[in-house]
Picture 1 (cartoon, rainbow, N blue to C red):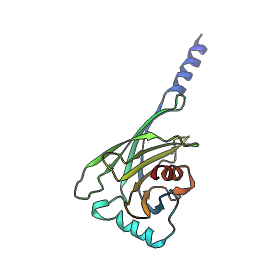
Picture 2 (cartoon, rainbow, N blue to C red; picture 1 turned 60 degrees about the horizontal axis):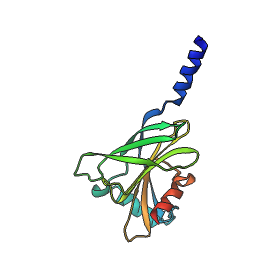
Picture 3 (tube, helix red, strand yellow; picture 1 turned 90 degrees about the horizontal axis):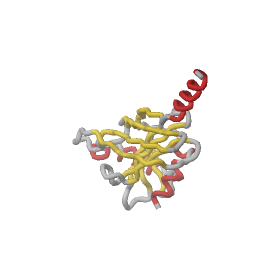
Picture 4 (tube, rainbow, N blue to C red; picture 1 turned 120 degrees about the horizontal axis):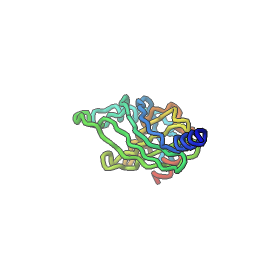
Length: 170
């Protein structure tokens, strides 16, 4: 009987949602086309680096902390990312509620034009093993051919997130 109780207990343990917290520093900047693909023009990349380092749009170097709850059995998941306000004159922490994106091979979340950052997308992803957390902020540029992606990921165009960016920008 005790082995049955142990078996039931371990099954219940496996079914519990994984709750965690991950921090990622935004250290890479990329100009992106409206399709979500990289913009390979050096001048656009330089303009993005300058833009996301400016006092009114400071994202480069900030740390994004995301709290998540993921139930791999039911696929119910929630995530909230916190980051400092990009306005250097307003030292407040912003909380952005993220929605699951349904990208294969990872747990990915995003908020597209959230109320706290209406000209941005906020993204978070973590591996199926709950390792390799990545955070990104896409700064939308009205009237320009490119947007600016600030991310903790040195190769952001290798996964499904860039496809999602292209789909959402259209």
